[in-house]
Image 1 (tube, rainbow, N blue to C red):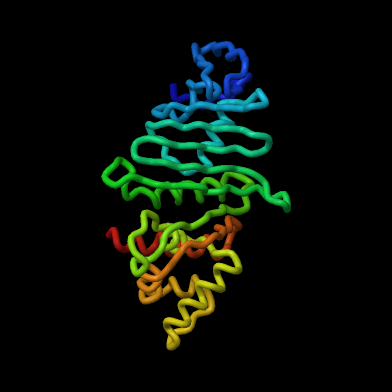
Image 2 (tube, rainbow, N blue to C red):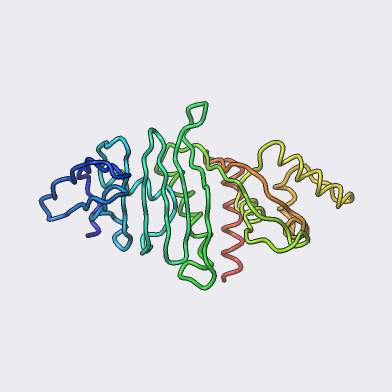
Length: 254
């Protein structure tokens, strides 16, 4: 338990396919065949139930599976369910338990760049990971930037401001604070809507808007959903914005 080996896992097919579970390793490690693939017994995420599914019945090592999981940012102390699914060249990581529901996928865009799509993320109030959303995101960005060839992280930032009524999601606000940049159309709409409402303090970008407390307050009350990317390249505006946010948090927590 807990060892991150390179032992091969073969025949991890799901969906009722007829496959043969791999032979146990010399350490006594076993892999249990399920309808969802195989249960990985020697993952570094030893508190979680980790499964791996490959409809093409390929071979993968535990080290590779753990690498895919780390693309999500989930901490090593997570004790819920983690399922890594391979479909062609796309990997999807589904995480559920201890108040966390998360889906992340890894694939390539039309230019051949590898990217991660943060499809869904929710933490239930009052649970183990409540107030740890930033920790998970920061884990993800640090791992991707320093250990992978991923170029960017894609997101659809959901929710809307308090002036539009109650919303179950705050991504529209939080992801701007953390360094995502909206796509061109959404960026233009954000800037235009802010400048119409605040003609005496015109801004040229959403980042400029969010650099002031007045801009943050206005967007929290009047913002709406958008799509965008976090640029993982060294020295990018996304990483600079995230670094500033980290410094702000550190000052508040002193």
